[in-house]
Amino acid sequence: MTVVTANELKTKGISDIERILQDEQEVVITVRGKPRYVVMDIEHYDFLRECEIAAAWLQGRADLAAGRFRREGAEEHMARVQAESEDAL
Image (cartoon, rainbow, N blue to C red; front, side, top):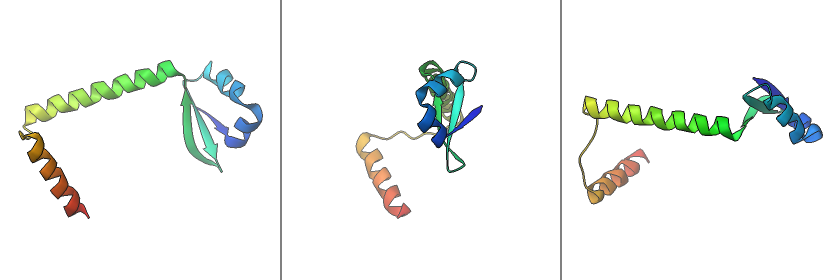
């Protein structure tokens, strides 16, 4: 993964990002020496989002199989969420 500083990005602009993305899937942008942003082309981003959705679906299926779920109506759910958020404070 290639790293570009914020200053390099300011001086070279998006053309530097486009050049790097021809060989790399992601570019890390650092600010004051610390990784801060990741830039990637939209196809790679869409692929990662699809992977994230698939992983969430699999986790949901595993939760159902293990009995980690509740059956409750909308009003019950909202009351429980409200009570849990008040307990967290």
